[in-house]
Image (cartoon, rainbow, N blue to C red; front, top):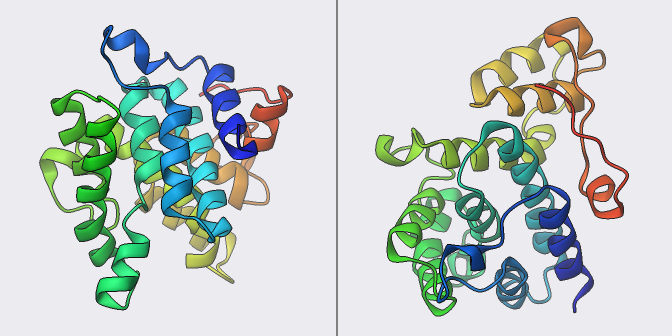
Length: 219
């Protein structure tokens, strides 16, 4: 098993996410198979695999507190950037608008091959198709979209707000993040003294979860 695939399986087990095999006897294959598919698409671009696995860790953490559909959340996290290589090839750009065009067909093919139910595939692909634009209210108002949105922003926030003051970061966190858990994690990660804002929370990193040392903070 690829080391990152092992980490994904460990994350899922540590956070108590039900196996997708529980859905039905002919249900989707385990999530480590989905991680392996993602790794194939991102072959030679280790930074994308690392980004994806970090988003997955945050998404599972947030979902544990928020109570979304764990299978949808995990699949959306694993596949949210899956359109980047094709966007670069076809459009000469990895801008979000092109990711949202090219990602869903790739995700749909993978999810169909792994026996995810059609309604679940539609939901996951809808999340991927909106994960930059935040455009379709039928998708973006779902809890699973909000969880993926926050998980992705937990990774991207520092690069989008370099040099921001604590007050500016607090305002941005309040505006950007959509879940209570996401806001708490953002304050813990990006503010020097999160207890000054919303009581603080001890965050759980991908490394902590994978090696069994992480503790989930209370929300």
